[in-house]
Length: 125
Image (cartoon, rainbow, N blue to C red; front, side, top):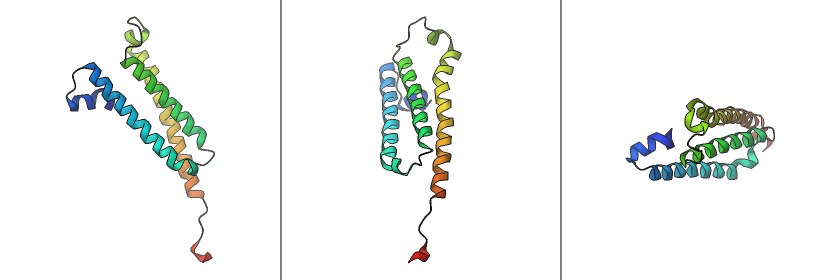
């Protein structure tokens, strides 16, 4: 929604090619933010939470790939993507929804692991 409608409208973009550039910039920002977070905090992620993180990232990547393929009109004119909006929403937003569920499970496991880590007490000094 942000990359498809809100940001192009706010910037006054009319041409499809400019809208696609904005979309690519937004997705690149998402990717850089995720890569920075992973680089900084991967060592702190509990082992039980890592599969949820990987699966959520894969679901988001699939959703972004489908969204970009649709934006760059890689599906044929008579493709089900072009003719059936419900199908398009299911295929694009289905992986996104599963990614949100997996990301929530990851956050739960990550938070739980952070709370259960034994910290050195002040009495040891």
